[in-house]
Image (cartoon, rainbow, N blue to C red):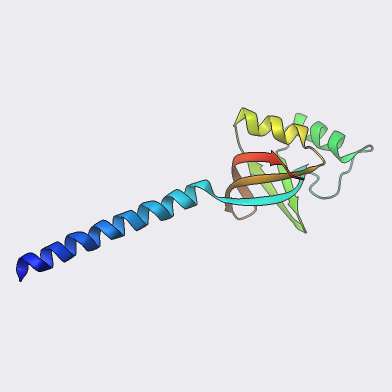
Length: 116
């Protein structure tokens, strides 16, 4: 009887560990957000004359972070990944899909792709 309980305990622990790994793997990849690439200083409304892409690039060049405008919400984007930053620069003022983890108004970016 005691041996049977030990086997059930081991099976239960194995399942719990497997489930935990599956959940943490999903959480590490994050969620996808599609919106317009902007900068954290301007958000949805650009202050500089000209187009949104030029304003975004100018503000980022002066130290602002990239942002993603999704509906009425503006997310600041955190990344040091060169490929992600290059894609954000190319998509400035245009639609992009950002994958990452959200915490408050910030998304820690894992990938960026152009959105149709």
